[in-house]
Length: 385
Image: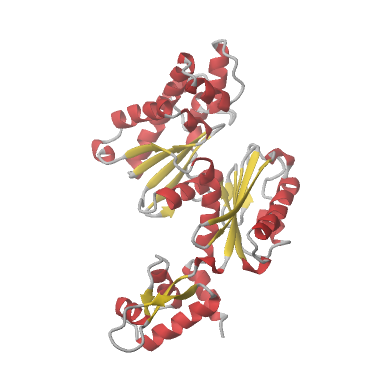
C-alpha cells in the first residue's frame, strides 16, 4: 500500500492513530509510521490532539492539514471574472471580482489573472511558496489535457492559446483549465452535494451547456465537448437559425438572447437575460410564459439525457435560473412526462445553491483534486529524503 493510500484515508478529516490506520489497512505499524512521517514532512498531515489512553501516554492522532498549502480558482466568463484563494479543504481565504471582457484577448485577460493571484496571496498572508496549483474555467471548449481553448466561438484570439504556459511564466505551478460549465458542476457538487455520485449541472444563460458527473467523475468526452446541449435540435426550433449555422438548436430558442428577442417582439423593453429575469420577478405574464416555454424546450433535451445518464440530481444554474420556479416547472413538466419512470423515481431537479460562486469553487476544487491526487502525492513523497 502506498503513501497516497494512507493519505486518502485521512482526507475525510477524521483523526486516526497509527494503530487505527494499521487496522484499517492491514499494514504493519512500522510501515504506517514511516508513511505518516512522510506526509507530516510534506505538511499534508498534522497531529490532532491525543486519543484516549488505555494506560500510559495517549497515542497521537493524525489528520489532514488543510492549511498546509493554498490554491487559486478562477471563473472567467464572457464579461466578468471571479477569483478566490482557498486552502486544501476548500475554505475560501480571499476573493476578487472584476468586469472583464473575454474578447479583449488572452494577453489582457491573463494579465489580470496573473496580477490577481498575487493580490489574493497577499490578502491571505500566504507566501508564493504556499501556492501549489491554479484552476481556471473559461467560457468555451477546452482541451483539458493541454489547457488550450479549441475554436471558442466568443473568444477571439484564444484558439489553441497556451493558457497554462502564460500563467506559469510567473507562477510555476500546475495550471488546470476547463470550460465554465464543467467547473460549475464540480463546485456545486463539492459545496452542496458531496454524496451525489451522478449529477448533471445545466447552465442556462447566453448559451446552454451541461457539466456531467457520472460515478463521481467529471465526463469531458473524447474532445472535451461532452454536455453541449445547446446545439441539440428541438421540436420547436424549426426554421430558427442558430449562431452555429444549424437550424433548430435548443440555444436558439431557449437561451437568454432568444427570450430577449421573443419579448422584444411582443413590445417589451428588455435588452439582456438579466432584464428577462427582472420581468419574471416583477410578475410580467409574457415573460413568465416565455421562460416556462423555454423550460419545456430544455426539458425535451434533459429528458433524453436523464434516460441515457440516469442522474440522481439535475441542477439548473446560470443567469436565467434566477427566474426561479417558472423555468424549473417547465423543465420538470417535460422530463417527468418523457423520461422512463425508473429513471425519474428518485430524480431531483433543483436550482443551483452555489449560484454565482459555483464556477470559482469548482475551479479551486479542480486544482485541489490535482494536487491531492494519488499520482501527485506519490511524486511528492518520492522527493522527501
